[in-house]
Length: 239
Length: 176
View 1 (tube, helix red, strand yellow):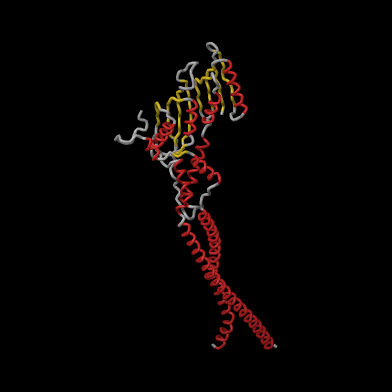
View 2 (tube, helix red, strand yellow):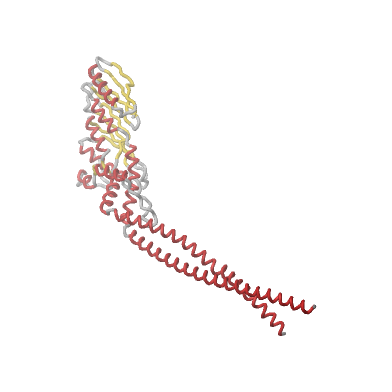
């Protein structure tokens, strides 16, 4: 019995270290290794966080340099140039204002606004009127530098008298003007999204739009007839 | 003799056992020390990294709050870039109708009478009367000046015909 105990005690001095080493190895795999993995993944996350911080700092710096008043002014003029909603009444009123400015009477006009909720497609407006050549040139120039934007897509002049002795006084003009509208962007401001850059070209476009003649609602209403009660919208060409 | 041999073997085993015991003890000490150091380092690094993550998270949330306070500016920027994107093709799409019309005014020499004029984005056709040869010559001179300016791809007479009296009917085509 005593020799057995001796033997066990002797062997224990070997088994114990072996058991402790096994425990250490087991603890390393169960406890330490996952923690090391966790630390490594956290460090990778830290790198991402640092990138995000530099991106956000850049975005904040960009936003801080922009003046709210300037941005509002630019957005306003651009929205006036390219409205968010198709408004054929506004387009017709604008054309009417320009024609009245030049003292030209529109003989007829036609347009097919289509689905009013469907913007993004140019709306052609066909106009027929009598005018002189120089007057027509000025009229076309004015149409193309007015806000909301209009584009003369086709023009046909015909001598009303249609004789060899005809003068430039009486030209029958058929004009197709395109009016535009585009829905507002569906993208909403989001912290994680990069701030779109306003390029020099964009700034140039804004400056160009500022030079255009803006026909505001007040101007339009001042030239429209007041006093008569109408159902729906007033006929912009009451002749 | 046998006994002496047995004692030798036992002593040898004892020596081997003692050596093994020493090595096992050393290995255990190394393993435990290594484990303790590694655990300490890992836990230290873990807490340090966690505090760094928390710090950065805090920084991100502060930046986010500041950016949110400029939400209005951001929405203006989005609107501006979007509108410019829509306006640029409209401006590029514009044909030279305006320019051609002002050129036509310049081409209108005395005795020139416009019959018809059609213009779209690619081609312009001018049909006109010239009341005499002098008017035709003057018109032609101005047309040549216009051609020299090279603002249009091609300018050519589609037809010139003498009609009643001294009248000329001309058809000019301008390729834009």
